[in-house]
Image 1 (cartoon, helix red, strand yellow):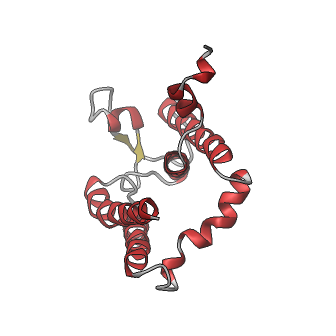
Image 2 (cartoon, one colour):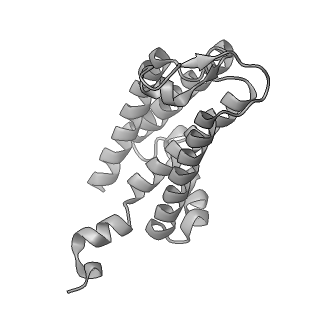
Amino acid sequence: MSMADNDWYSTLTSPSRTASIAILVLGMWVLLLTIINLVNGAYYGDKALWLGFISNGSFGDIYTEHDGISIVLDDIVFGILGSILMAGGIMGIGSAFEGGIGGWIKDLPNSFSGLSSTEGGARKSIADWLIVLGLVFYFGWSIQNNTWIDPGVFAVSITPFAFGVGLNLLDSAES
């Protein structure tokens, strides 16, 4: 029996739609934060030093003054991490969706049909609007206050976002 015949091996080599989308979105967010950090600074206008920030200062400083566009090792590591996550998400979506990434992009309007119609039910509409509410709050606050990595903003914005995703997953599990 080869490794390809095992259920666990096939599960690892072809992740679910949900996991693939989550990995892709996380990778896009990491790359967005990297670009913002390079250009403008992601921590109240200062450059976030990712290794220190994620480790709460155990691996060095959390931030430094932003002096124009500058690249440090932390930006390179974080950018590579984001690229790897995006590539993994794209490969997973390619195997999970008919038509690959193009088929997934074409299906995106159907995924958020609850924004414009209650045809899918009230729960679908509430779920889609909760996702939008969480994203609008995060991006609005981050743009207005020039900070993209505020834990308090994460805590507030993730709540409606996670409930929206959970309700959508509940709908898809029932159908």
